[in-house]
Length: 160
Image (tube, rainbow, N blue to C red; front, top):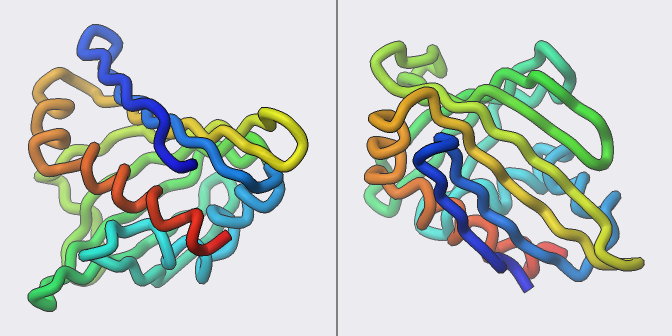
């Protein structure tokens, strides 16, 4: 099923990507909780992810990098704020240098994941990104955040 809606709201400084999957909510939660499953879909198909660190609890961090077709690596980090299994996850999301150190010159956003059961065996996942300003929203969107996330989500059905 995958992505059903993308809603960008510059007034609220949010982008919400909604998707639906033919899988129970606990199975969809595993896609975030298990680093080996997360790295199978987190990066778009042309930029597969490698999860380096995955401390999946409030205050913990996740570090990763995506490798492009030319071999270039793009590093990122999360600081986990909320884990409410199997329904809610919230984290700060930012860019990092090659050593995984947060890049202070790049924007930081908040990502909120909400999983809800539509009916037995079917789950809706909403990924809401909160931007600190219109300028950051425009910058992150111009870097391909919508297209990259949508392409990444399209890989989940194959994993399920």
